[in-house]
Length: 439
Image: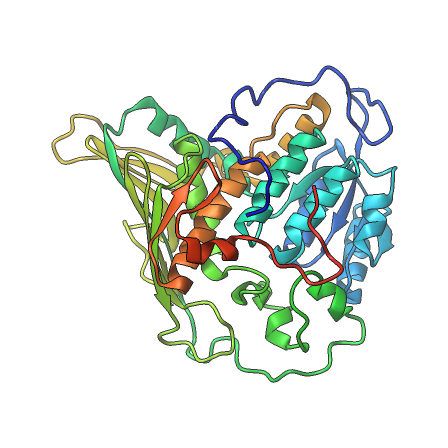
């Protein structure tokens, strides 16, 4: 592993609400009424959403958009104009980062770009909103946290559920002790994938209005394949199902489903991870499994993660095919984007409680952006401070590594690595020249 400091458990989180006494904006001192100039990098499905959410927060002022695919860039400029917002359009993210008039950046690129752009943004004095998962390599995440701390930046991760009322209620209930002693948790995600999946297109020439080499960036240079890029009109991009760029359902859905556990239990990492997965049914050319089961041993409980994409049956009577459940000696709790449910055990005297169909509690994205803007001005740590997302992302990455290397992994918190020597090299980013991740 590189000779860089480890991330001690929770030491960075303690005192997280302490504000700095001076403003650390890019070259300007701001008053409470000033708007924050934001540049948006990556305007695909998530980036378009983030631009829309930001325009609903008065403190945010979108000033620039960047994408290497022409139609996405044009769509973003048009969407902003419809809201009366004029933005500068560029095709190289480095122009956004170098622009001293921009206070903050939003990184909504494919996952393999998250770490590099976040670190470079911090180095340039920008505050950063970066989508989840935080990283594709464990060591990238450590460097993201180091950059945020070294350059005193506010870095909000896109785990927006933390700003949702249902998830905040779940954390409140768990920390109150009402569930009793907790020994088991479970996260699951289901769906019904067609056997053909996303198909098996051959390599071809990239679209004329796409800079494929820049899209690959630090990832290995390979011919253009429609599924590796994965931009379609009816689905989220399929790049997330190739190991060079992402981690499949485990890091896509899994981060959202495991992060509530970390929110409830104060960001503790698992002590060990074991996972298995396979493409049992789907016959397309993507690499990640259609079925996966992972087990995490935390200090005081076990937790499992189930990715079942070939069968849509929801669990626990909910109509949504994804949730996080926490099971104690007095009661169980289930939370997802539709609600939060407290379910007493058979012999418990407590009454069941339900929080659902609440418009205010169901809001996540706009409150998350509002929190980001507030913290840029106050210099406090945001709701999804980068370290929280790095921990949730790392937990999911460890599950993928356990599955791919066919071995149980033990986590070394102090060294921020695993104890299995054969797997340690896979934790370190291996960037294609000329890209280097330097804090």
